Image (cartoon, rainbow, N blue to C red; front, top):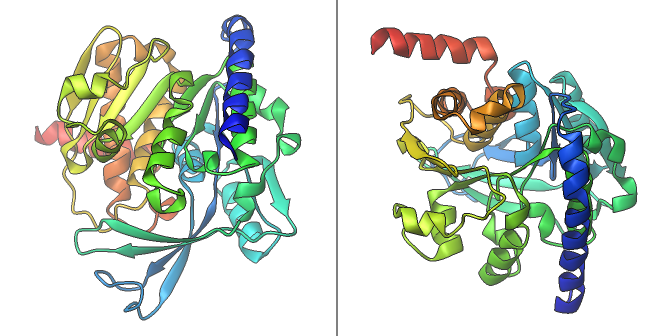
Length: 354
């Protein structure tokens, strides 16, 4: 997409959002409790043994992946109401992914199937410390080809929270579809939740990634970034509050910076602080950040005052940390997502041992 066309798309989005603000404020009182997640769903191939390169792997195990889809399952696994909006191939893998969403009680009417493009694949290596490296097959894949005309706008308008990442911003037509979906969600009164989930190998360049990710930054009400992503986006030290606050914008209600096993820091208009992580024996960190986001959104959608009450926010983040921690104790993302009883049991055990 050339610069003039991209600027035109952003200007159109700006105009749409200005018109949507009044509509959104009037609609905000009508809350469905629904979290709608927009973006990619794909197949992860993970080596059957750990601490090897892709070339050295003796075999691979397939699993459902894609951050927005993981978050949708995370919310549903916790007893919440969620939906996924995106596109997969009209192939065995695409049908498998749609079935997994249904099996996990995620509303699937927003899924579209492409007869001409395949479902995306990602090969994910697990290093000794459980961290990951990626290699993607998307040339293009079905998730990149979702058109605005294929959006289930009635479903998106029902959302109390509309959650998305940045991968769908990389190429057309999905970029314009993403912008349109955000506008529809705002018109419906949804809180917009953004986890950039930076995957640099998918972007043409680091500079394009930075520009693309920041192009919609000031539209979100809630943003979650990792410390590494703060460093990438700002060029500064993510431990420095001034560096982090350079990412603040006036409409933002909550900015979260995650620090892996160290926990997270939170920033609002009225207060800031940190919540320590929960120590567990990590086997695989795949999906831990998505489980964290799903856990947090499940708490916010039930009680929006979490965003204004520091004690409630800290409790919600502790719950989210528990979701992420439990997910690291098993292989895979969706298979490892915890249910609410498991999270509460862990928190109760920690409280008793405190």
